[in-house]
Amino acid sequence: KNEVEQSPQNLTAQEGEFITINCSYSVGISALHWLQQHPGGGIVSLFMLSSGKKKHGRLIATINIQEKHSSLHITASHPRDSAVYICAAPRDFGNEKLTFGTGTRLTIIP
Amino acid sequence: DAGITQSPRHKVTETGTPVTLRCHQTENHRYMYWYRQDPGHGLRLIHYSYGVKDTDKGEVSDGYSVSRSKTEDFLLTLESATSSQTSVYFCAISDRGRNGEQYFGPGTRLTVT
Image (cartoon, rainbow over all chains, first blue to last red; front, side, top):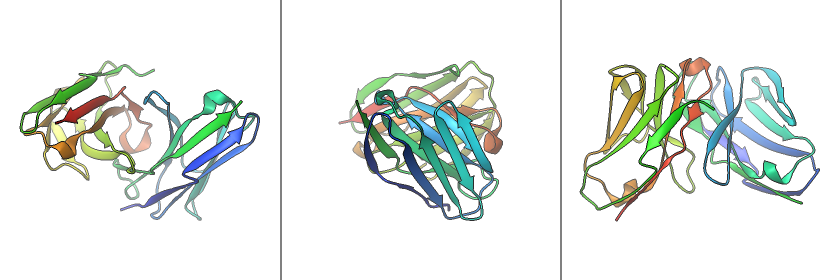
């Protein structure tokens, strides 16, 4: 089973700062997922990536398949970015079942 | 947003009673999943479905059963609810399984007293 670990568990930053959240996994995978859970509880898929880098607005996700590591970056952070960010990886290569990290709670202070 | 609804959104029930949670989608996606979310744990898969009448167990399936008689509905049943099943339950859907993103419903908060 894939072990998925995120760091840090909690992160507080000032508005405008560049944010980095890390995710490492133990078993080779086909793709990794990044999700956002709003303070109200709703979960939104941000990215699914299998190589390189993806960008949506101020969010950038990168993955290094060889090192089994992914990062989520937020540029020009804003209080509305405050949420829990979750990474997830397949249990093993080609598996539909995902293993989720416990999340990184991000708080952006105005 | 993907068209996924869950019902009920909140429920309080007593130990030993059966409970059924419903997930309904309007996206015609093949794959549907039930997860539970508890403090200190990541989302954990209970059961998933890869088509009508096709289901498989997840990592925390004990005490739960599922049914999928049509594409749009995936039911999760707690045969005899226990306090350890107090949790927030999320349904998710995907059109491409391992090759696709998952889209989540709003969640159901279940309390077993």
